[in-house]
Length: 107
Image (cartoon, rainbow, N blue to C red; front, side, top):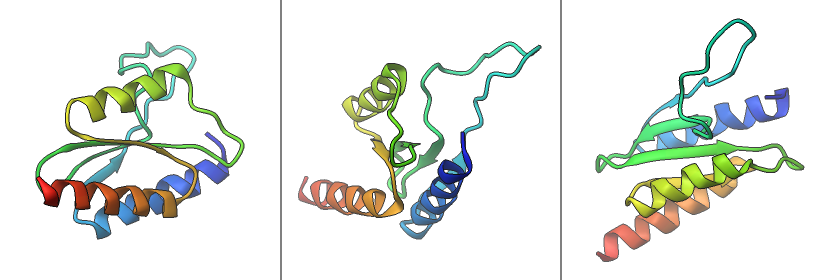
């Protein structure tokens, strides 16, 4: 993950906290000499919403593309009723959270 993505991850964690989420960075980097034991495609940020729903946020730089595994991961989270999103800037996350809040309030 490059510096640009690191900045987006930090900003998105702050956004989630402002919206009342318990959020943290999910470090799932494969390193030489270490066995990868995480969930392949798991998002950069994992969180729990104020209402107790699981949240996964994948951050990409402007020209970045998510892998199939990353896309599948957030889709699976959404299908199960959680928050799952891929963003390139914190403003996209804000829009997504506002839209989800409106949907949850209508139900």
